[in-house]
Length: 304
Length: 237
Image (tube, rainbow over all chains, first blue to last red; front, side, top):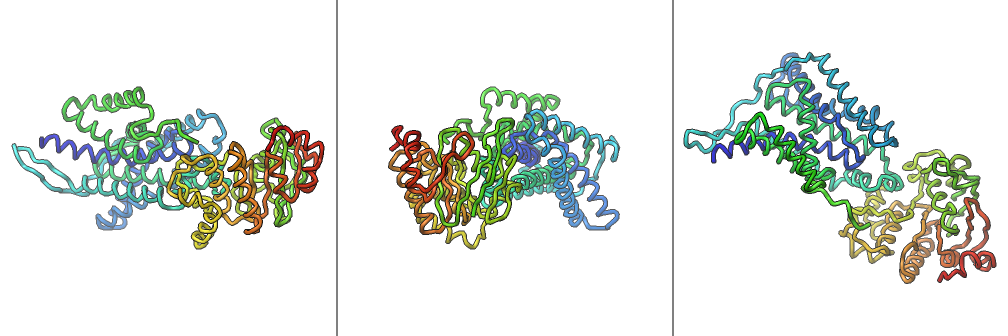
């Protein structure tokens, strides 16, 4: 039982990170009907930017840990947001009228460029960051097994919850969120109401990218090691999360992220850690076969 | 107010408009009637910049708006209730109306909402219902109401009677008349239902194959034997 609870905590932490990345996939998909396969790479960039910003703030700026973390947070969100904007501008907007395959290929191209850029600029070796936030609680000691809940895990889950709550509020209650939903449902009509559709799309990319950036920051702090290739697997898992929850559905992305995190943690704990990715992607296949719209996705048919 | 000069436009290689001239004066209701495929919807959409005009001009209050992108054209005091209504199906009625007011001063919103709902009391009962669950007539009301929320000077209406029961059509035309009369909104109405449209309008144009074939006051066109033969006597109420 203790073992199970411990894996639950680990899985939720991991799932929160996947959920944040998955939001970006699902947002872009719902507006443009396109999978932004460079999104995982943005998350990797976020991890690197946060590492650089944190180290710069502590060593050069001599900032305290808390200040340095906030510097890293804002730098990461700012730079990944800028990347998201540039990527849309350069690689996707010129292809908006093209067949669907074209932006997909362009996305893969962007992702290869960014990966190689980071590998060249930062070196291909794994980058370590000594644990910044240590300690935690020990819950329910018994049978010689203590459930530990680290501060870092609490921070990851709370940050994710706060971002998701803020994001949900933005989508449901602000005029920007309304404009995004309008563009998602009928882009031509949104333009007829005076909405600058291009700007809404740009904003969507910026928000999605900065959320992925935050996920990168948290992974850097949580695991303490990053390399230029982490975006690939995490990106595909977050994509799986978005599909599992129902691509295009924001609560679906969050739910899907949590489920993927839990599946991964529990599978690693009870079966075999080598096969955890097989389990995750096996779930993806099953969802696609039995429930192609995902858990919270809406069916295609609706009354117009 | 709204003036279209020698407008040509189309989709890809297919040209749908061949030099259309139309003007709508301030305070008027002007209608454009014509058969299916005559280019009526294309004309309205070209005025809004999508598709782009290949030749000719659109002037609003003397200002050339032909080359502006759609969202900037719509900020010049033009509002469009398009063909097929295009209500946002997964947004509530209230949210649809908020989208209509997206450009306006938020301080006007409550006042504009009240004014618009007074015209469409049915929508008031359904404010929190999703657009996609409304009946056809209600969706049409919502499309017009949404267009009104931006306080337009000129309202473009594309086939508001399409697919609606005769009683509902009559009701909607009464509301259109009220919008023009009580709120001073200039209206350019595109219709296949020539009889109702010409009765309501001050002036009308008849479009055939992407060109204006005839024009005159509503009464003149209604009395025209050619029009009667083509558009009215074929069983139109």
